[in-house]
Amino acid sequence: MKIAIFGAGMAGTYLAKLLRKEGITYTLFDKRDRPSCFCAWGWAGFRQVKEFAKAIGYNADEYVLVRPKRAWINGVEVKIKNVVTFDKIKWLEDMWKDEVIVLNHMAYDPAEYDLVVDATGTARAVMGKSEYDRLLHTIQFKAKSSILDEDYIYVYGRPYGYAWYFPLGDGWWHIGAGAYVRQQADYLLRRILEEVPVLHYGDACQCAAKIRYVVPGAIPIVDMHPYPPKVAIGEAGGFVSGFGEGNTLAMETATVLYECIRDYPNNSVLAANEYKKRVLEKTLWVGRQYRFVWALSRGFVPALLVAKDVIKIANWRSIEISKWQALRILWKITHG
Image 1 (cartoon, helix red, strand yellow):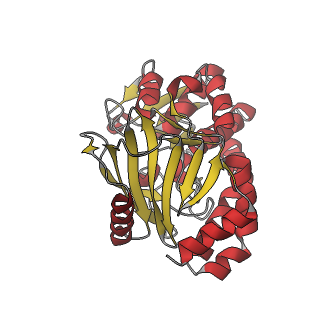
Image 2: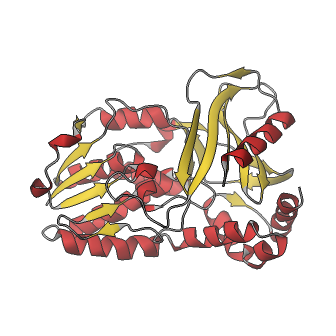
């Protein structure tokens, strides 16, 4: 099977490494000649990430910047587990070192490939837009502050979005906000900056970006017509957690696709169909997060009714939070 991968970000490059290990032929396309600055610095579910990295001969610990121990969420303190901030640019630079990146998309001839992979993130350059697309507006940048404790992540949430400070080490912080509309993101960013002013803004990694914000499966992740089949992994398939983290899901969805290709090496149609089935089963927990987020936008009581599942997911994946802590946070988010 010969595979075309469009997008050399987290999902695309990771898939390429897995295919190389298996000896499967692929071509990796991207519009950039080097990894550019990305404003996403977090790995949740880090134990799983270490296994993903190990599968391609990498040591994820070498890319960790900070291992936060606690979080302040609207003034409520909770314990963090299994979450790190990492050097995403270095990770991608190392992943690109032994890859041939084809910059000219005109060199792509569908007749040469058995399967096409869309790993282009929000752009969905291969799969195309969908009526179900939902995009979250974000503002993100790096800044220095000597006031903050790097053992902590700081979060200020409202029903329509949240703002954050994530530690990057050496006094640097990744600061940002995301919301349904840009004006809401601007407001959240002002609020958190009022709480803790920054001392120096970084020259790099300032962006106003959009991330895909839709339950996996609500937008097409497989397209069988015309041949060759097309599949979407990572953010291109809507695989971003309900709270905006997509790096780990990029690697997870790439792994699922790789396993399907490995299991059906001579039939790309079967591989694509099996990918759709397996990846949606693997990411059922993401849908539960989204149901909570949408309930939260309607108020305290609707969110409370679906909070149980989200608490379980949080304790499994990223933080230790009691029902009482969750109740306090939920009240503070919905009541200002």
